[in-house]
Image (tube, rainbow, N blue to C red; front, top):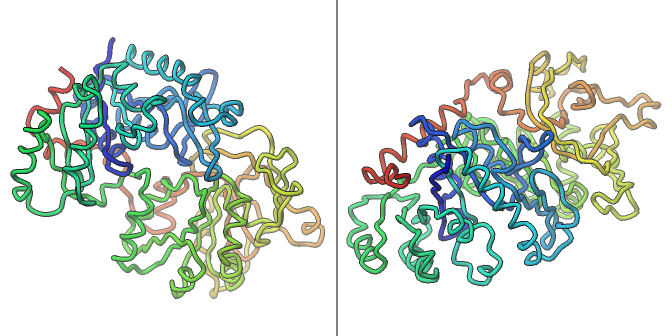
Length: 502
C-alpha cells in the first residue's frame, strides 16, 4: 500500500487542527479504508502509552485519540517526536516513545537534522502500511523564522505530497487575513499543496460571509470548502481545551464545583474531559488562591499530574494555594491527587538522581498524606489494570467521602512517572498510616476517607468510575468519533473529502 496523505494545517495554534484530523480519521476509516494518523513533532505534556518497537512508549494524546478514531492501534511512529516542556526554556525530548537525554540537551534548531531521518522513516513506514494517512501540522506553516529547520509542517507535506487543508478559527476574528497571509508567505511549491480553506468555530448566518470566500479564492485560487459551526461539547479532549473549559465553567453554574489546580507544568489534562460533560458539575481551572477562595468553597479539589512535580509544588506555594488546600482537607473536603498530585500530597520528595534537579536533593510535600516519594532514574511507562481495595475509615457524616464508592471497582488506565511512593516510615512508626486504595502502591487513602492519591491516569475514563461517583453514563469514545465524522460530513462541501484521496 502507498497511502494517500491528507494534511491539516492551521493559521494559528488552537485553530482546530487536532479536532479536524480526528474527525477525518473516523470519516475515512468508516469507508473501510485502513487509516493512521501522523504528527511529526508534538509539544505537549498530554501523553499516552502506546506500542513501540520492543514494548511500549509515550506518544502525544492527540495522536493517540486519532489512532482510536482511525480504528488503529496507537503506535509511537504516529508521533515520532514528543516534546514535554519542563521549564519555559527546556523540554524533555521523547523520540520514538523513549526519553532521549542527548537530544533534550541540544538547542532547538540543532535537533532538526538529527530527528528528521527518524521522522521520515516513520512516515514512510506508515504510508506503506495504510490506505490513508491523516497528518496534523503544528502551529502555523508560515512561521518563516523556523522554516529552515521545519520538520513538522511543509517539509512533511512535500515529502509525501499531501493534500492540505488550511483551517482557521473565525471566532477570533481576522480569519480571511490569516488565511491569505499564511498562503502568501508559502513558497509556490508549498502553496500548490493547499486544496482548501476551512473556517472553524463560526457563529451566525453563514450567508453573511459572502463575498469574502469568493474574493479569497480569486486572490489565491483556493476554495473555502467548509464552514464549521461552533461546537463546544463534541466530547473530544483538545490540546488547548483547558481554556475552553474555563470559559464554559464560568457560564454554566453547577451543583458541584470541582476545582483543578492549574500549575505551569500540568500534564495529562485531557483525562478530565469526561468531567466537563457531567450534568451538575462546574469544572473550574484554578490558578490563584483568590480564585479558589471565590468558589464558596469548592466541593472537590484535584491536584492533577505534573511534568515537574517539585517545580509545580514550589509554584503552588508561591501562589499561596498550599494553605487553603490543606485546610480544605483538614475540614473534611474531598481531595484527589493524580500522579504528580499524589506526590505533592505526601510528606517529602526525594531526588537522589537529580531527575527534577531539586535543590539539596529533596523537598517537603504538603503533608496531607503520610507518604514519601523517591524519583527513580528509570521512567515507568505502562498500561495498568487494577481493582480498588476495600477500606475502613471513620464513619463521619460531616466528611465528603466520595472515594468510598470506588471500593471493589475494576479500573484501567496508564502510568507515566519517575516517582515511587511508599509509607513515610517515621510517621508509620508513630501510627500515622495511609490506607492502600489500589494494590502495588498505586493508590492511597487517608484514615478519614476524604483524601485519595493515585498513580493511575485515566480514572474518569472508566464508565464504572463515572457511574459510581456521579450516577451517570458517559458517551463512549467511539460515539464521540462517530459524531465528529457526521459533523464534517454535513458541513464540508459535497465531494471534497472524497476528492482529497483520489
